[in-house]
Structure formats: structure tokens, C-alpha cells
Length: 68
Image 1: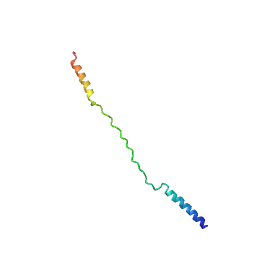
Image 2: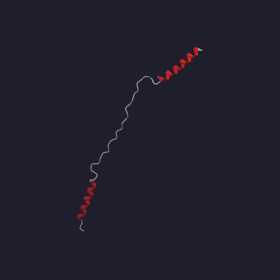
Image 3: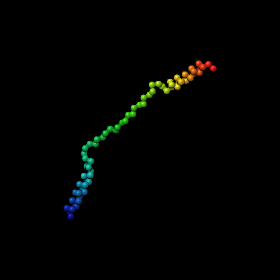
Image 4: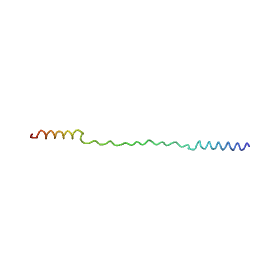
């Protein structure tokens, strides 16, 4: 009877010890997070107010030169 208890205890100890070191002893390799850099949208060559200012100046020029 003592032999069966000893074998049962050895089986339980082996099962518990086997699952405790299941991952191994190697160091964990941690990869750095991936950073995605989106390029900044290129701005236009002219500021946004130049084209409307030219149109307004052209309309003023046309209105001033008309013979009404």
C-alpha cells in the first residue's frame, strides 16, 4: 500500500513540475512596436487667397474699364 501511495505522489509531483516549466527557460524576445509614419500632404505652391484675389482684381479691372 505504501508503494502505491509513493507512486501516486511521484506521478502527481511529476505532472505539477512538468507544467510549471512548460515554457522553458529561454529569455523572452520582445519586439519593438511598429510605428507607421504617414507623410505630410504637400501644400500647394500658392497660398489659398491668391487665386480669389486675382479673380477679384480682374473683375474690378473689367468693371473700371467698361464704358457705361
